[in-house]
Image (tube, rainbow, N blue to C red):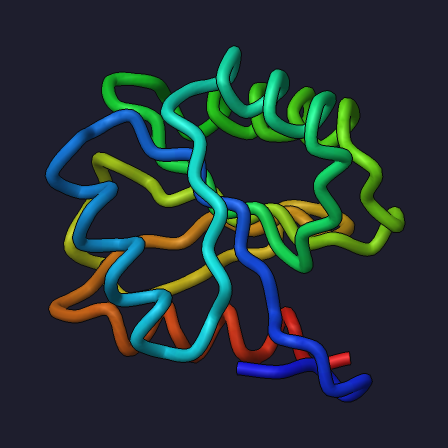
Length: 133
């Protein structure tokens, strides 16, 4: 996946679960994204601070945390980065009702909550929409 400027789109993935991290990273790379990975909030902030990362989108999934708590953590991570102020933050919800499955909700500005459905194609569609600049 490339931006309009011709550079490969970078997703900064923050995922605590070892198995899910591997699946997400492989899927995102398979969709053509460059993927940089952090294991948790502390690791993400350290990587952003040390590597001067400039990701096109931050995707975060934290095990056992509410969507609200994960949004706060994601915003804190973004606050430490060299993001352009338009960088989307996507939180993957862990628990939700069947009526939300496969949907995404804008919760203000560039912050989104994604409710995974049957496959990752829905996530790919959201990421494509959010990174098309």
